Length: 145
Image 1 (spheres, rainbow, N blue to C red):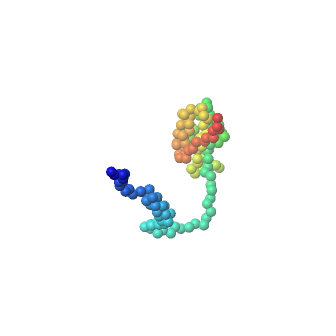
Image 2: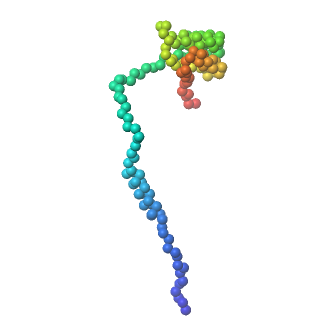
Image 3: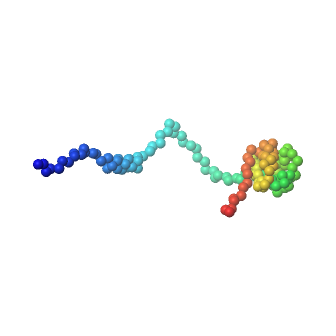
């Protein structure tokens, strides 16, 4: 009679979880202690300036577009719309101060929400004809409903 239990012999396995933990700690240590050097081909010494920065606001031309699309307001002066060329002339006149044309004015378009798309395009075209390259749109912050 055989009273011994026959046990199935298990193959030994290597537990990889502690090994991975150690590798992650080493990786984090290497990442933290590594210094990064910036190598450049050219060593340039830039000149320095002692002048203060001058903060100048550009000259602004405010253009308001009404809802009836036949009136425009340029710097608080109402202009009746006949054609784009006349609107461009009005923009050029608004850019003059004491007979001197201001350099690179910014045209700010404040169009009513119900104004037609064409009336805004008319102002953009007039700014192009007046050779004003800087055009922006005024908006208002919407309140939460």
